[in-house]
Image (cartoon, rainbow, N blue to C red; front, side, top):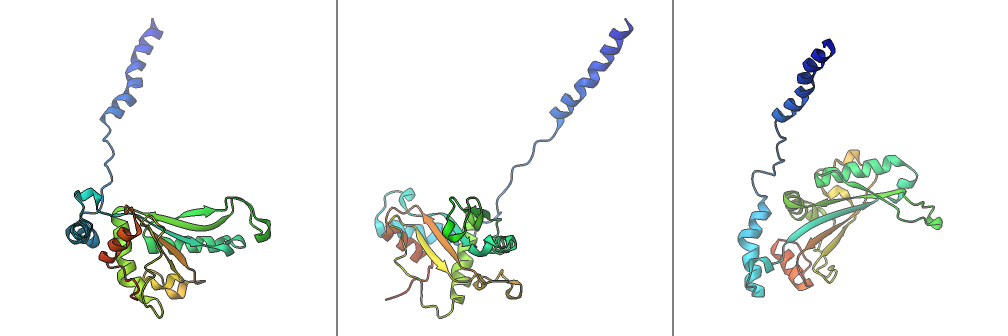
Length: 215
């Protein structure tokens, strides 16, 4: 009998965690920026109507738009020193405003002393507000800082409306402190769009203030 009484007393204590779990507050959903980036508003108000008029689209969804921006930085000498990979990731993180992912070798190549799975670079994919903010800084601040700049190649499209440009140094970005850079590195910036042809993609970038070279 005494054991039964103890069991009855213990039952409410076992139920306490379940009751506490029910009263726990749910986690708040992450929220985006309060205001749209400047170029996102510019696209909605000016670029999209101009594209619809130029290509005679019948629906707003037919107008080309930015989908994502991929920044890739190769670190071939990182095979000898892991610190070079860490430095490149730190610099790319400051430039993009987002932590990059490490890119590893997919197969071994003996001539280059490359083993499978070894870190050889880093990359970051930007979408949404961060994509527009990076593009704004790229076009307005970074690209004009290129030495002897005469415009970007308007033919660097892949046939599907996506544009890729190569930058020879990371020093053109204001987020990088020159004194702290151990080695100058280049990077590839790919702008992925929803355009179906290069002509549509080129017109989209022109309206988005991309400084193409004039013949």
